[in-house]
Length: 366
Image (cartoon, rainbow, N blue to C red; front, side, top):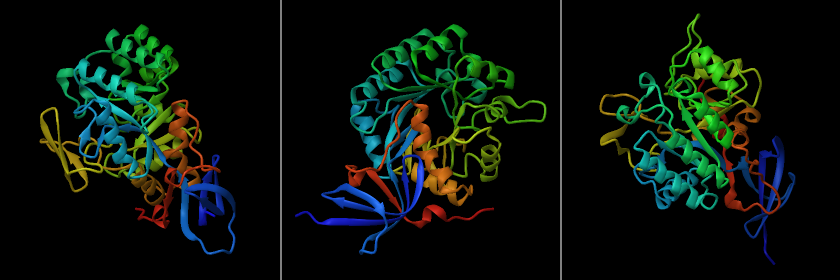
């Protein structure tokens, strides 16, 4: 007879609710029962939740999507993030030659659904040159039919797609085609005014990529894309490493959103997450320097953080409670992509759960 292993959880994320003092019984490596905590000896767990979902993963384990846009490359990146608690990713191909972006699309389509790969995030090349960040200027161009055709092809196969673009660089007819395809169209790397942003939201742009970063900052008479996004019901992704956005600014933005459930965390992870401390992008070495990823000019070049650490930061640094923070790395990004939430239920495998200690609730607050 197979013995029962017990996990005594202080908190358990289940069906959109944070339950307290539950006991998970495991038999043969799978959940056999979930019940109120008993008195039998059990392994103490602070928080049990499903594996995390990250919609912006440029790389991991020493590999970049752009550097190896193959099924093997994407699977390697997914495995690097799985080892850190993220079970599903949108591999993110950034600004590059059309052939590289199309190769990433083909790779994602081949391994979609089988290796923790949810689909594809195309970040660029349809950006404002003034807000390109580390993206190579030589590849920037307005939204064109070639990209729309790629997205339509991927969506026709049923694969989730997110595409980040500057709405002011998008022809309305082509933008409408992207929206009609069912892709999640996200505004980012943009110099859009607040009025331009609101028009784009009205046309179906339903998300904003890494809020605060690569966009004009708010001023009293010029809220820009940033202000328009915070004051709207579109979804907003946020990099929660304390480097891309100060903790105070994250608190202000989250408090100012018109409703809960509109903001989520992304890692924006590069190859150094779960890998070596440097990699090459556009022929230039990017390296970790005091926790920051910088290029030769010292400019930020992506993030060196994983989503599990982002959860700890949301709780310990931003000051969110678990009921608010947990869905930002799980249910909310999945809902944006039209996906059901991951659940811990009878039959769930042990390795499909993330078991965390109390560190996820500790941290210094300024």
